[in-house]
Image (tube, rainbow, N blue to C red; front, side, top):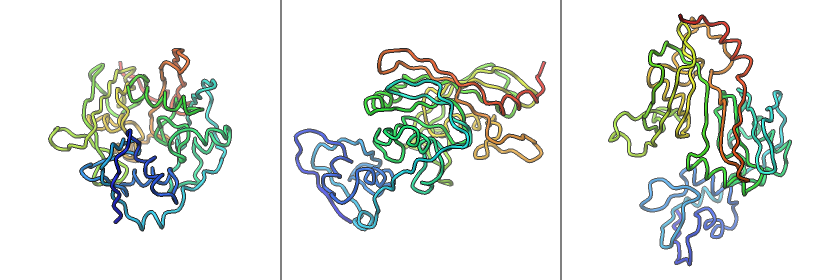
Length: 318
């Protein structure tokens, strides 16, 4: 285990930038990856981020063998998509697309050669490979789950990237989703206010925290919903996530007994349900925000044809 004591520094510096200067034979992207994987730690801090500001005298611990054996972050390959995203809006600073369901927003080191929105981006806009803080997801300021369709915002330069990231952090990007859930929801609108944390039983699942004392690392999460239409055995909802946690909408709806139709991770569906859907019924319908140039943007994506056809097969309640 290697120990690095941060010297007195004239002004705060980001953890990833500091380590890049100290460890010369590794890229900043790889340092970011190792920090996110928990391979780099700081004394008396449970969770750290690449953006953590060092002020001096911190004790950093890392496994030298991990650093020595780790290879440089692989270069992403430009890859086309069978179903190309529709461009909803574009200017010099940003791109807003209608992401198809079934497509990853970005790959990870484990599935680097899988087609994704990012591989499509660097094929169509090679310069985007230099945008952002993570070479594995250039230009990506937020994400949609693989099976979620709809509006996705992408930065085309670093000024726009950091501006949009800050907007999202301050919750100034308003999002609206459409979801079909299993079950007939009686109330016309409501809120789900359960903190979320990673499940200890799964590497991909999230779970709600009912008691605040149960889990100190849980993040606040608030989801608002309103009924759009009722069907026999199903309810169509408009969803407004006030926070942007991983799987938030899916976990929250499942937690109150109304899982998103077709959700294989959080829903308990049987073959007898005969859903006949390729992907879960969750669609990012709209985003609204003020652009870098001060323009108010409201951008919408129509419900995919497969989801429209599924709705047409359902019987409405009186």
